[in-house]
Length: 175
Length: 137
Image (cartoon, rainbow over all chains, first blue to last red; front, side, top):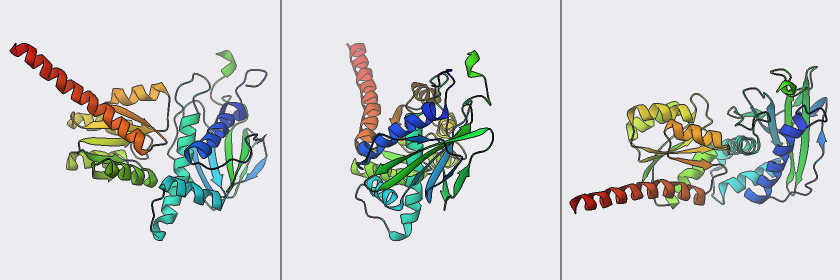
């Protein structure tokens, strides 16, 4: 948390996502992560990866979370999900989209709880952003992002939410 | 051998769960992409067991379980979700599910979840038989 005890997008949301992303890549998919010291950035604008899936959280903590991959990394993630099973070439794209969405769903569900009361943070079904472009920060919003580098390329984890987490829905400090 | 209905909006998860079911020696009764389809498939196929995702578009898994319980009290249901919090487990069990499977899923986890339900079921039968024996005596 910040020094004034206000929960922040980067500490309460992005940090647990980074930790679970790293463990998911390493332990569940057996993909090597090059460095586990990940820098968090708070940019005004960020260019998303071409292969990006996104979901939102609901209730009193409303943020958008996206995870994008370099082509080679996504291909490896798909292979890991398939567990050696061969697929028809014409179903590859649909499987790839499904895996992109499943990864964000699993990591967010595993990693996040409501920073206010520790309860389950509801999440929307994920969507795929095809040929994803850029996110721009607005006046009352904030973007926090981190890049995880693996042996097969990068995974970009991005969170967009209110500038002061919770300030748009309730006053955390009064609780 | 159990006839199992697989409910998940994710193609890769349906594909993997179907593979695990076959590997474990059970049969795939059918598959559905959302809660509404699951209800229809349950009425039509009368499966022994359902694996039910929680987060789905159209109708989520917890609502689907509640509606299935209105017409089918017998089918066993394992909820599948990425949420690890106890609160979600309680919601799923309150809705009428017997088991709970945390993503990421693998064959071993599914086998264990099935075994947990059917061991309970076997234990219930054993207990009933024992009661009957005592009554007979």
